[in-house]
Image (cartoon, rainbow, N blue to C red; front, top):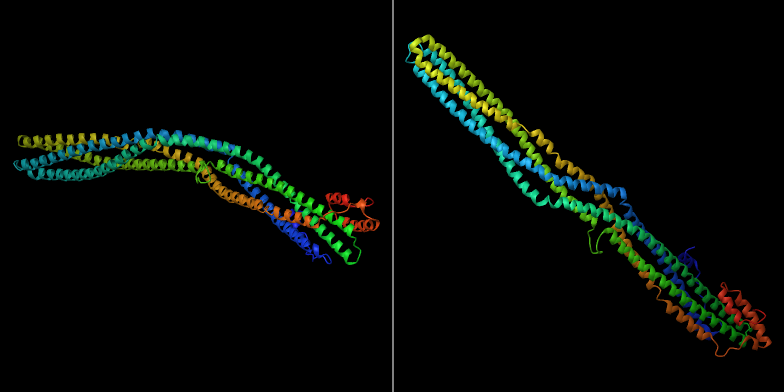
Length: 563
């Protein structure tokens, strides 16, 4: 049965003043008050100590839970992932060079294509001039105008189609140039950003990996200390609880003195009292109270000492809590895990930014490739137009041959027409070759673009258990803070509630002084009547005792035959 329950079930006896013993009534009243103080105070103290056992156990359990959040395997895995991510993140700097060079290459290719477009547009203008010359010259040759006028019109139509294709070619190329310029600016900005953070972030990640390992070691060390302190706390609280028995002992002994005074009063009331015998009994009761006060003081001091040790251990638990958390003190609201989470967040932010840049670069590449395919189709149209004009010019030469000398001027114009058509085709071929450069190499870029995704996956793998651990640690630390404060408060209350020691022992000693006769006779000096009376009353009082110490004191005052 616990001390608290024991006191709760103890019967509080409210005795009336002792009849026929008015001189002892005030003493009996003070004893009743002292007994009530013992009963109430020790009941309260017992409940407080039992509560302290509960809250200390909860505090230790929370710290054990904190320790369990990090096991060697989890720490090794997270540390390995962080180290891999640090190395991979450092390597991403080199991949940026390829993106920047690719953007510059696209810009250069776009400029060269612009020059070829201008050359082809110039060739079409010359072809149009020669088409007009054919029409004019045919007008001077009898019988040739109608046939060559139709020929010139076909050339006009082909040239017009070529101009449309080249104009659209130019617009597509301008759009691509705008995208390339934007991408190049983006790459330049990102290169500057990487130059600022990439040297630092991988180093910080590597340091954080080591911090995590050190955190695990610290938590493991704390767990060992917690075990030792837990055992010490249990022993000290158990000693304090055992010491509470002095309260029940003192209560019973005071109650026995009160009952003894009632026995004396009753015997006086019925005429069975003997002054000499009663004087010796009162001396014995005074000795009982003296011994009760002395034992009470001694045991309460032991309880106070045990409680002081428990409070000190509870403060150590709070210090260990901060050590496990990685903070420098209770005012520090961060810790190793929280700082590690911040560092991981910064690294993830950088990786996401680089991933977005890679995606943007790849989108520009895909757009360039799509544009190259469209431009190639337009180049094919230009080459078809060149072939048509070249065929028409050849046919014109044949017709001129049938006209003889009259067709010679037309033949000269047809030859020049064929030459410029060849020049148009040659320029188109050069542009087509460049288009291969414009649309090539993107598969390699796409492969390189997976670098940030791989690093991001490594970071997420390492961050997920750390983030979950941080969440759990936050919950545990909050619970531990509340429990730790509760432990300190409860133990402080228990210590403060021991301040009734003087109140009790002082009353007992004063009562003893009030009962103690000035010069009691010794048992061997009593006459026969006094011996008989003393034997009777001491026998009756002796039946009240429940403790050996009471019987020892009793024996020192009892007649020789009884003792």
